[in-house]
Image 1 (cartoon, rainbow, N blue to C red):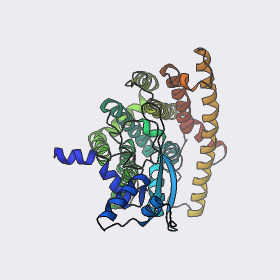
Image 2: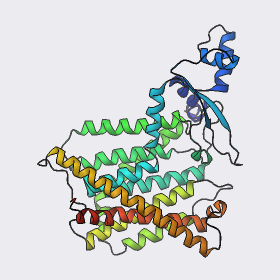
Image 3: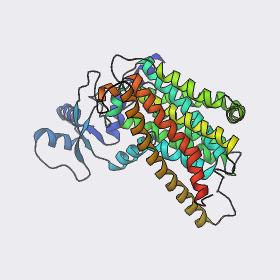
Image 4: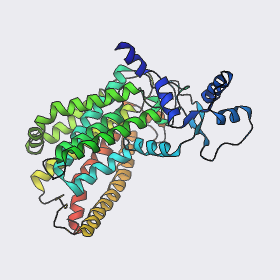
Length: 396
């Protein structure tokens, strides 16, 4: 078992998976091509062409430059790679985006605005808890990401983070299986079909992290298992926690104080990593959304009403969902730009540093308050202001 864990933690399984999917690091491909040619069994003609400087690459191949990301010392390591299978390339790049901010800031509000607030509340809370645990675990365990070479690294920003566990895999597993668990009693659909969809989604996101060279196989497996275990353990208490969140008078205070304490006491590293900023973003959005849920329950009625009805005309229903989504996203984008600028300027002014000083903005006393303020307002806007705007525009 220990041997298997060490194998799954290594970089070679990641590199082999990439090569099987048609993604080759030029330097390693050349070396491998030369070794195989010496044995009389080379199957990498493109590599030989690149090595010898002759011949033309096949139409399905691409030679490009990627960056392995900043190391602890901040250095960049440019890489040249070859794509021989565009189907896997785009499939896994799109799947990887399903675990990034652009997905969270669109999918989670979409569920709240157009599907079911009951389901959205569970998704947002589980997502916040899972992501915090994953981010903290990375900086406590300090397990490195796959090494390059032999691995091709297709992303730059996250290379400065540690690898274990994969928060993409954790979030994908948590969101997909929480969605099934929360909707199975709300809507009539085959439970087995929902499980298959959740498994497919989480598997694609997990494999995308291996394909992009950002995580080892063990990172992905452990991340998925942690989320699955957390869902299984907390599921019986979801209804109680939801009721407590909506009715307790202490909810707004708890949602501000506790996340801020967690952010300010985030594990410190000997170099800058974006994990604290990402964690603050997640906890801020979750805190703002939770306060919005509480405000809607106590002060606002008939907001974010479910519009998915079996008696609605399909075309009319889809147009209404699209209109609600577009209006909401536009408001969130505007909110993000305005609040981010105001919060950043206010905090920098308080500490007497320039807004353009990127190093100063990485300090905890500046990064945490401006990130938390920005995204808590986004969460609050998504759950309170957007539904009110829907009502004003007659999009209920």
